[in-house]
Amino acid sequence: MARPRLIFLGPPGTGKGTQAARMATRYNLTACSSGDALRDEIREQSEIGRQVNEYVESGTLVPDELITDVMLAAIDKFPESSGFILDGFPRTVPQAESLAVGMEKRSLPLDGVLDFQLDHRKIIERITSRRICSNCNRTYNLLFMPPAVAGQCDACGHKLLQRVDDCEDVIATRLATYEELTVPLVSYYTTRNLLHRIDADAAPDQVAEAVAAVIDRLLES
Ligand code: AMP
Image 1: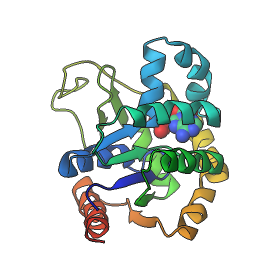
Image 2: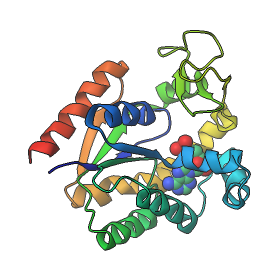
Image 3: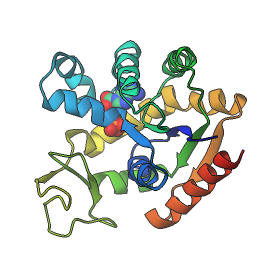
């Protein structure tokens, strides 16, 4: 396998985005976060941004068809020979089914789905201390990945903000939505022999090694 095509699955706050960025650099892959794609649309006040704003702010899922169109359009812009990591998509069985159809049409079969696991108490602790760059979406964590200068992005110098959906009551909605609509993807991808579990309850460097071990195995197969 030249370049893997991967999905990073798991509740919010498990470090998928951080690991997607690290693996993209390590293996020269394109990482694409569905949440970032939607936040970019909202920031640009595009038509899609206006349609999805309420869902994102309240921690509920945007309609399957809309997010699938956004993500397939993003995939079509990836460099042709690049492998990729989809972070946060799919999040429902209908999205996974539409993605499978889209990938088949493009002759781009999926190679693996990495399922990041962490208990809810730790998820809440991590999310409430998360900060995100208002300009480049780079994510920090005040507990274990703080910026060099408080309140400022190391990469571009812009201001760090707390996401409106990173407050405790919205996190509860997001976790409940995850349990109801996204957890069924675990058995969906297990039956397709694509699922790999990742213990996300460790420092980012340790989790990165566990993720890289899975990717290395996939590359060898
Ligand atoms: P995230 O950054 O992955 O936590 O996503 C933030 C928000 O974007 C979610 O709470 C949803 O409102 C929306 N979103 C992101 N990905 C999806 C998806 N695959 N399906 C539906 N909504 C999504």
